[in-house]
Length: 497
Image 1 (cartoon, rainbow, N blue to C red):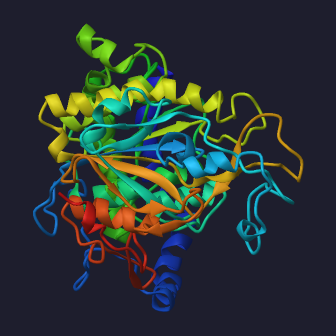
Image 2 (image 1 turned 180 degrees about the vertical axis):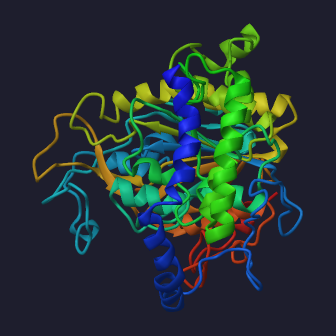
């Protein structure tokens, strides 16, 4: 009885709050102080005359048209948090093997900053065996035997660079366009721009694996200064799909509906009084949560998938695993979710432990994901979804051609330090060329020598495939229009099909 009472009490307390002395003072501030502050900072209100905002106060998640005809309807972005070593996976450098064990040339160290390398490290040759695959002849190592079979579906970006060499800021830059906290994530921008195709599901879903969140935390799927209705909804592949989604014991669906109606009447009154768009976000989130109680458990259930699908992905129903998340990604885009983000933690291979080594730990991480990533591409293709789903794979930076010598001393295991000057990402589907390699690094994989790409270029290209001019997808905040790519970014047109 107490639980049932608490639901109605929530609405009553909100109503009584409006009659308190504290609320009177708040109204005074909103009327005078807020007016002054708005004059100093510029209006943050959306939907005003002349504003380019796509935030619809009545239905913020309604489906919207992009700037031009898109090549992709949805995105599955697979972020390997910790930064996989491109030198063991995709960037074949036989010349580096010849330098194995030699002192690193001073030319590679002078004026450079590294996260942990100190003094003069040793060069470290590739630990994997490379071979060419498909008609494209793409170089893929034996660490990824399954991915080798779909080489002709993929465009490899060999010269991705960044200006950040620590995990959290590099992850933020890749996912939000800024190395600092407070900017909206890519998935939030996409949901803001396109809305959702399925009113019963979020437009932006996040799935994590590897036992931890990315170093930058949940900010990499946060909404920043966009209304919070656009932030990523984190789901789980084991247990309840979303925490606290179910009703408390003794509360049926009709009672839940009545309580939400009562709460949202108060929220609507507050919006009419103060005009804060976050109040509308709160209303939308209550309504979405109510609908999700039915839709989410259904779409997040992989038990009813055919046995051949489980074998194809290597799934483990009932457990939290990357393979489960890869299958869920397919199910989610199939149901109309715009942006699905997979974060897999544990790709940081410094060589300070066996699990964090490039000759043991990295192999284990590849075994956990290679089959599932390949299955995702094949499954999307057999369902006719790959052409309209852009799949992106990568980390936040790369790894050095030299071995890490933490604080000037050799590490216990084979590993590489963080490297910002060159790493590999890949894209598939969604209007991207098939069986193509773009960009090149020098003979040891240290620097990009052609086809240099930045995180802002990646973002601009993803938005382009969704039908957006990245310079025109903006949101007014603190008196000026902001965008995902800040003041940079170019679409990598050479990789477009």
